[in-house]
Image 1 (cartoon, rainbow, N blue to C red):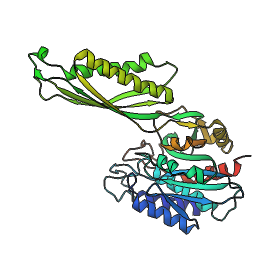
Image 2: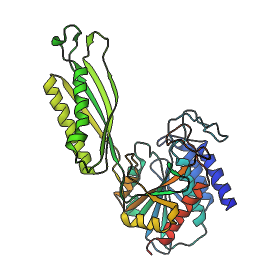
Image 3: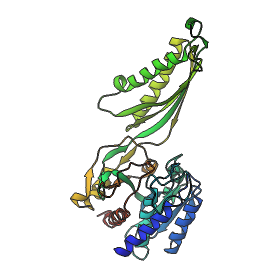
Length: 375
């Protein structure tokens, strides 16, 4: 156990020092490749800087395990000895730990025989624009007979070492909107000669929030958030242009589609009512993460009762959902929170950190899933 802990600690800290963004994971990718090859695996390049490795089992039917690899554009403030060596970049979302768990699983299985074959997926660009979709579109699930996929995300909102399980919808579908209002400028003393873009945006924002309270079934869950507003040139000039942007999220794809439709209807109505022109762009990002109930039951069966809790769905998003559109899957959280150790900072914080010992629980979980699958 001590040797395993030393290995996961040194591996995680090595990866933590070289955070990279998106698909530009050149040092990270090379490090993962070298470790996998040193364990005897052949790796296949995917999605530019990602890797796929395959372990043949007694059966051709395979179980896939995925780890994301990319970091965030965050300047680290932890002051730890193994802090980021890349200014303005940090593993603030635990992906260094995710890679370490999957590498640890590969290390454990290297000299073992398994009933099911195993597909290891090291994926770039989870934080955007969605490396999972590119991997799915590459035909991975056609080349291998993958029966299920599993993933873990470290999560400081749960006590250290406790798994968070959720059947059905677990994380939201998400998208972003950009709205530009074009009115007509005039002197502030003569508003009747212009078309006030600020007044239009005020009405529009009220309308956007009314979608949740008046168009959505109260038993459903969704969010519309306006995050930025930019407009106006001077205190005594009627603004001719205002832009605003925000996010939409829902657990149900039909609800998400309704939100988009209502936003377009609302902007068209505001434009007509106020004599302005409004352009609306909505970008879809990730589908909802929806866990297969039987796989969640399997996950709970390989854990002791005190090692997991059933959690409420979260409005955050994850591109693990693209894999679940190709095959049934189960995504779980692994708690890293510890007030005693000072691990209290949320994901994406410049102070986020965790005790590497928790990664051994993740490796155990993956291995036990593989052993128990199909029983």
